[in-house]
Length: 191
Picture 1 (cartoon, rainbow, N blue to C red):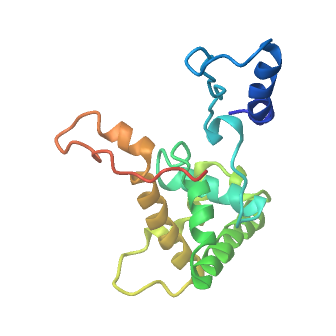
Picture 2 (cartoon, rainbow, N blue to C red):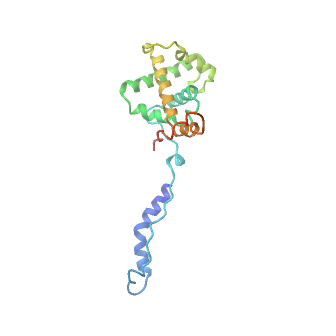
């Protein structure tokens, strides 16, 4: 719903009965003859139709780095709104996770500027792949000791989980196949 139409309907609603009463001349009509007052019809729109979500936790540079990282890690993550969801999720997480994401995104940006003289968000896939090499390390039970490798592993897990639990992924994957898709189980975008 557009704000302007909502305000008009809100202002007009209490005034309408008094205007009707002023227009009917003579004594009041019996209750059965009175016209039925209808509530105003309000236009409804989803928040996604009216505005773009604003980053709340990450800075603009960190958010653009996160968008590029999501795009590289999991196909469909951008259309599923994963960066915006992670902005909310990490903002509400423990301080340790917040620090991990902030330092990791800043390290990716610093590495891109140091190696390619541009922001991580502007790198092509081959250039960004060079910075994502810690993801290709042999898997072990121990958590990586390097902060960037710890961040990349956590981000990979979070991006995949958020993508696979989104409405867009559920709609795409439930179209057929042996397993039947996600059966309508997904998170809703934040309003």
